[in-house]
Length: 410
Image 1 (cartoon, rainbow, N blue to C red):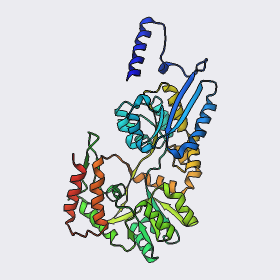
Image 2 (cartoon, helix red, strand yellow):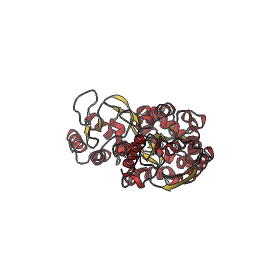
Image 3 (cartoon, rainbow, N blue to C red):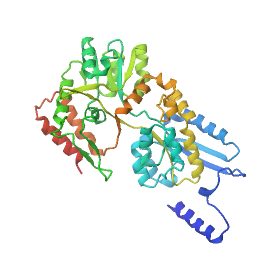
Image 4 (tube, rainbow, N blue to C red):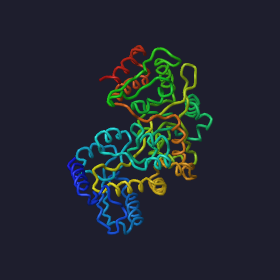
């Protein structure tokens, strides 16, 4: 705040004196006298080598326009918001963060709207632009579009046709003495069963509490219909409620032939299954006599520019450089991360990646994760009962009501 007040004060003095003096925010980047520009970039530890290349190419691109001192510091993307809001003036100039932190960062004044928003929108997938926006204003630069989940299957045991429905997957895996794995202890995955049914969950206008109609007792699909479908799935001898780690162990020991996970397991799965590696959008599942397309939560990584940066124009230019077409392609090549850039997403290299192609296919049936903290535990408790076959025998509607009440608690 001290810096913003100082800038405002300087601006008033300049106007009064009519000398035409300008603050750093108003200074043209192409200064004939290169000045020293210190920038700090925060990102994941795994990005260290990648960011070293990107920063060096940025310096080369703008060589002679400034004396750049750009430092990369490791800062976990999931904790970026907390670290930044702990001291905005001391925080990084440019930082990578998960999209569900955007609203809080914008509300705290850590991010300003992006000036060339139309250009950024035109270059990126619509879902990532939405994730980078608040009230239709773009506040960050889309970087990836790969934080979601889809189906992996072993072509040796499950055909492409069977992979289209959960019934087909369970039949195929059971016939081969194999398992289908999905983590119902995580409410993140459980959303799959409710997302395309007309039953809803999401954030209230306060941005903190949730609304939830997953216990709805009327309509074409009721909450009890979904609950019964989950019980039917759990009763299959081929179903197992395993965490992501256990799922990968099952692939390695040969017990798992299909399961739900994300791109982070793509390389490890391909190392085991090789040419038999299959990946596709999530299947449909049987609910109240109909086939319902399984939904998913989606997310992406964004790059932000600190509103308190001493060099906001250069910080913005660096953020745009990190997220441009060239460097998103490099990110995919070095880190296997799915691009938000539309051109890169449509490239042959991406389409030849089974995991990324499956994630993009699933994106049609995905929803940005916008929920409050009280969503997780009630949904996990309910789904755990379903996965265990409802051992207490408690009425399904009662369980749904309890879950919805917990999710909506204030």
